[in-house]
Image (cartoon, rainbow, N blue to C red; front, side, top):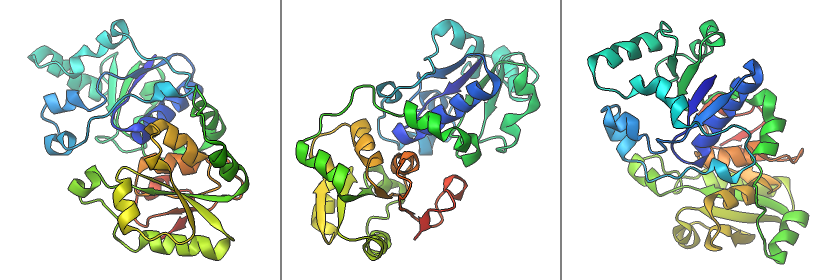
Length: 294
């Protein structure tokens, strides 16, 4: 039995689920999802990386909208690892033992251990609680077909007929622009040449692309980002984030932001001729070789 912590926004939740699913496939047995701390409240309570964790916007558990197979952990299971967030001396000592693999209920955090160590041999014999983001292609690249099925919406979206036709017949290209919390985090690339260059590459490679635009600041995009050619502002249509994800995934091609949300939509895009454009120097450990870096 193993437990994987689920936290942060939908894209990061998908990384954590993919890691959990790989564990379940590789080892067999039960793997559970701990959804209690989507906003990392447990780590904030311990004073860990307070500045980083408190600046995130409020998040919701969103994996339940997809056809996932792993169950959410209930309290009797999680009670075995109650020492993780405890403050008394005994539990702190047990927590240290668990981190070193010296306690029967083990604990691993991929921010503290290398990507190789988290797959240590001891994990095969003792139940382990995994915490982290698990940003590494090798955790899930061999189970992509499974993830494509499981990251499908349980309830299909009702799309307007015009949008259905565009997705089925046009050279659709998703364009994801993330601003929001990225402005505070100094991660915003919306005003850099990236999108202009990405669309230039698209126009060189195909005739009459239709851009489907997604953003958490869609009005800013409309007013400030020139997009030559036909465009549809999907984020003005009132869809939930998981519904936008599904639409993005079904575009023929993708221009992603420096965001795990659009990363997963592009990665799970099953079009064999897809073109995916991504920012340079962003999380190279998760970027497939054939994607175009700009």
